[in-house]
Length: 114
Length: 109
Image (cartoon, rainbow over all chains, first blue to last red; front, side, top):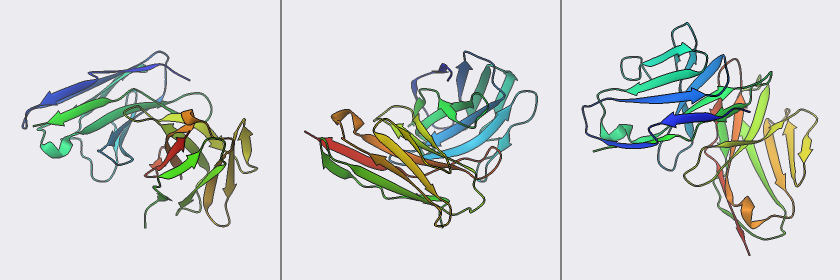
C-alpha cells in the first residue's frame, strides 16, 4: 500500500475564489487520480494525472475548472477554480500501487463553498 | 444505464448474521473488480479484489459471475465493526474506474 496525505483536510471558501488541494505520496507512483464525492453520493473520477504529461479528464470535467499539476512521482495538486456552492464536495486523490490496479486513497479534502 | 449498480440498503443485521451484497456492471469487457469499504466521513479502503475463481479472506468471500455480470460480497459472522458502506468498483479498461453508489450495512448488537 502507500501512505497518502492531503492538504487542506477541509476548507470553507467563498464563491468565485479558487482552492488548490495538495496530494503527497510516500513512494513514487505512476498513476494518480482525483475523485469527487458529493454528499451522500459515490465517487466520481475527475481526472487521471501522469507525471510529465497532461492530465486526462473525464466527461463533464474540464481543465479550466479543475487544473491539475503533477510535477513529480510523489506529488499532485488539484485546483477547484471559480468555485460555486455546487462544488461543495469531498475531493480525494488516489494512487495505484504495485502490479495490480488496486487504488489507495488519501483522507480527502472536505470543501464547502458559501 | 449506470456502469455499476448496487442496492443502497441499508442492510440491518444482528451480530453473527451472514449478509450478502450484489453489484451488477454493464461493461462485459471489464477485467478487474474490487470491493472497498468506506466508514462515515472517511476515505474508501480496499477490502478485497475479486478474482474470476472467487476468493476468500477470513469472514469475507467475493465472487464474480461474468455470464450475469455481477459480483458479490458475503460476510459471515458479522461484527459490529463491519458496519460501513461497501463500494463495488469496476475497472473496464485502462485507467477507468467506476464506483457503485455503495451498500450501507448496519450490524446491530
